[in-house]
Image (tube, rainbow, N blue to C red; front, side, top):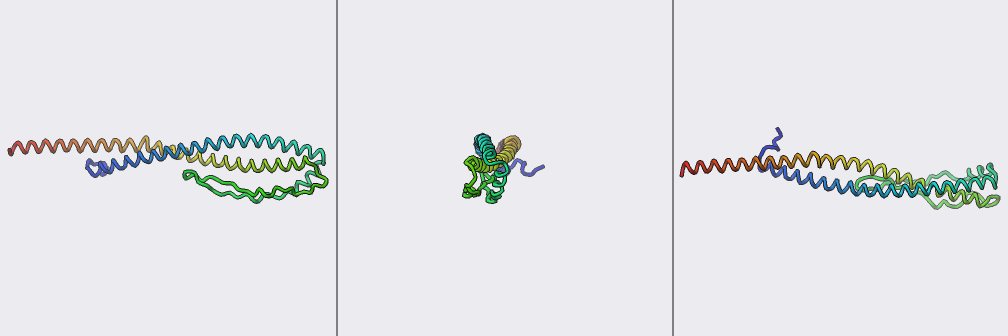
Length: 204
């Protein structure tokens, strides 16, 4: 038997302290979960908006590319595409929301100047280039948001499990233990009081 469950005043204090800590822990977990849920809902809204923007931008980019292919010839457009440098400016950092590490994607937006000469090219190619750059930026933002949402959802699940354990197991256990120890101590006091009265009567 656990010695901490014996009906003593010391154990009653321990049980009450444990109960207070468990309740405080549950309140904190509940607040944390609500903050994380709000953040997640916000990210889901952002993801919807960006997805819609990506669809529109992709459509405009392919339309402009088709026009450039017709006006300049597919082979010429293909040759010019090889002048575009590989993207190597992307940096992934971390930021924390209530202990959840979420990615923060940064990249260099300064490389916006065309890598080809304007001689023998058409406005449709500039339009296609700009639209595809926009698609790249939006895709990076969307990947960051989706990854963040996934991590937040995992943390919400973990927080919910801890909150449930406190609410359904720990708090009821210490509530019952506190009541049982309290009752046992009161019963002991009553017995002691009766015993003392009997002794007093005998010697009175």
